[in-house]
Image (cartoon, rainbow over all chains, first blue to last red):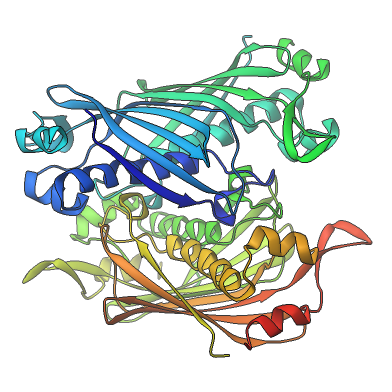
Amino acid sequence: MSFINRRDVTIEWGDCDPAGIIFYPRYFAMFDASTAALFTAALGFNKFEMLSRFGTIGIPMVDTGAKFFQPSRFGDIITIESQIASFLRSSFKVQHRVFRGETPAIEAHETRVWARRDPEDPTRIKGVAIPDEVREAFSR
Amino acid sequence: MSFINRRDVTIEWGDCDPAGIIFYPRYFAMFDASTAALFTAALGFNKFEMLSRFGTIGIPMVDTGAKFFQPSRFGDIITIESQIASFLRSSFKVQHRVFRGETPAIEAHETRVWARRDPEDPTRIKGVAIPDEVREAFSR
Amino acid sequence: MSFINRRDVTIEWGDCDPAGIIFYPRYFAMFDASTAALFTAALGFNKFEMLSRFGTIGIPMVDTGAKFFQPSRFGDIITIESQIASFLRSSFKVQHRVFRGETPAIEAHETRVWARRDPEDPTRIKGVAIPDEVREAFSR
Amino acid sequence: MSFINRRDVTIEWGDCDPAGIIFYPRYFAMFDASTAALFTAALGFNKFEMLSRFGTIGIPMVDTGAKFFQPSRFGDIITIESQIASFLRSSFKVQHRVFRGETPAIEAHETRVWARRDPEDPTRIKGVAIPDEVREAFSR
């Protein structure tokens, strides 16, 4: 799984709290967008396309965590490096590494499910097998 | 550490994503408010007071994670149960348990630092010993 | 249109910016929840129910504005008073008044559309007539 | 006041609501970042620098509004064009125009104050005269 996507994100005034550093839930929103960007980079089309092509409702989170080594403040530009750590049958693991310049700032991991509406109960969501086309896009 | 604070939170339309379920970074914002509410309940005054009384800049996150068992959708009311798991010298651990009715929905943990501006470099933040008054407020 | 809904909202740490006052886009999220609460109070069921009963996709915003007289900081509790200013055929106007204690803090207005997916192009949204049941709920 | 700053913003999954379109308070966060980017482009240094150089606490909003002509959904890329509409003594007006491709999507306006902590009561914020250096940066 050597496919890595990198993106730069500017920390905005509105991302920060009264201590002048980023309000950490904002990082998780950035990671969610980074996972979307990782799939876009691998597949060649964006998440909107991805969901409609594969009949998927989304890739909901089942387990996530992050270790913060360095705070960022508004005006900082951070680099988020994202990659798939592993594909299971209907779930997958993502790893994000955040840098401020050369300095490691955060390590985060995610486990997400490839999900559809349950055909027997459309108010419910269930995991389904990840399409081969998706797996293969990451092994190129 | 038997002191537990419970609060009900309504999942709003704007907390939810195109799959109709909560956008998970919103949970971390709810947990941040729950940790603030836990201190308010134990100390008898709110976080604003807490920071100004103890000369603290905040209680920044160094490590957090969550496991999601059940999605919530807008209109749901969830209950967040929060407690201190342990106090170390200048850091502490918090545990959040989320329920939808009787059903466990999420388990989350936090490690946070009791922080001040570094007097030698006010652009930096450093951990300092947690005041006894704070520890004692949770052992009553 | 004398039906008014009032709700108290606590300004959280994560709602505030490095100046220590609320980041104003958060007010609009609070107003969106306040409009939902207004309909819930008038109809007797929540927005999730409302959308599914009336086959509505949402009540998207077409015009909004706010005047801010007083900043709020974290820990403050504000009261938001919301009411329908007028119903048109497929749109309606809402007014929010925010108070800190007795002091007026914000006045805001919204024009929203009662919307459905366009049956001829489900990627589009179009306004439809507001159901009589909804209008009547506000004139009781 | 011909100085215009343009930036492209990708609408992310987490910016959108259960109707699949952007949750409109997110636009105001984008506008806030756009106003910061406008000053950065004119001054040649970012908002963090700007506040520390001029001893300013921020540029709080006193009046804002927006008209929405077209919804955006996740995956869309919008262009935000921002410019100063006028400078008054201690306040200024900003105009944002949003386009999806060539199509106008939103028009928004802001009135903001150039603010400092009140030296007689540091819990209060007051408007002060906008520095000449700032005015001049926009007339080049």
